[in-house]
Image 1 (tube, helix red, strand yellow):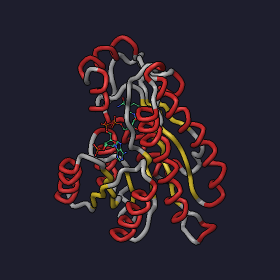
Image 2: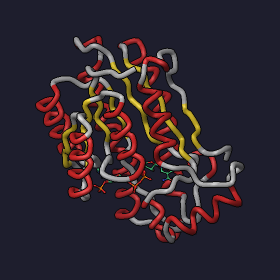
Image 3: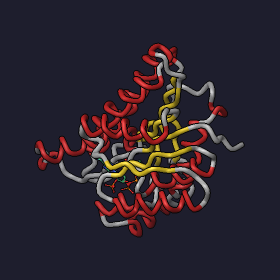
Image 4: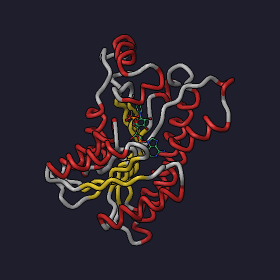
Length: 251
Ligand code: NAP
């Protein structure tokens, strides 16, 4: 059923999984905020596509690893739509470095984009959603990864660590805000065909590898993750809370 009232902010929605979530949510009737950092053209094109289909969307630039930029992003979202019902903490980066290559730049870059971002965005969302502070409740979905339990691919200790942190954060936040009308869940995708894999050779080699390591014998599509995320945001998942849903083809 279409929901013409609700709003959703998707971080990192210019490309890949985030763009699929924003597009599907708009088709379900959500007004969507499309956060991007560098990919302005892609974000604006997605807004145009949604608007051509009769939906409502706004693109908002912000580096979500930066607390002040996150605060401004939520203010711009407020100005566009007036309220926030759903936050999808999707923005993230993949990196490949061995433990002997760790330095402040690669480690803080990764933890900033994948972990600090989620804290900053959840902070702003809870301020707006919590029934304790006059809000009407809401939903937060965090984008983890099977790397949290499998350790990631080669040079993946940094990335896997960030996603393990998200799994713990997800559970803890669910305990903190569950009584304030806010449902919190996470999704753990497996190998999904997006540009994130350019970090280690591109989509084609990843899809080849998936044939061997994924029980279903293939990589997933971003749309297959988006369907689960949009379901978690819906009333169909009204008693799903503090959970982590694997979308990984059995891996
Ligand atoms: P992607 O195609 O590389 O897209 C990443 C998105 O995140 C882009 O829109 C990018 O924005 C945005 N982003 C990155 N850093 C940001 C920052 N600091 N501030 C704002 N936006 C930022 O990646 P994806 O595969 O769709 O990944 C989306 C999420 O799913 C990530 O959290 C990733 O870890 C997770 N995931 C992916 C897979 C997979 O196999 N693809 C598997 C498990 C989990 P700009 O381009 O505008 O900078």
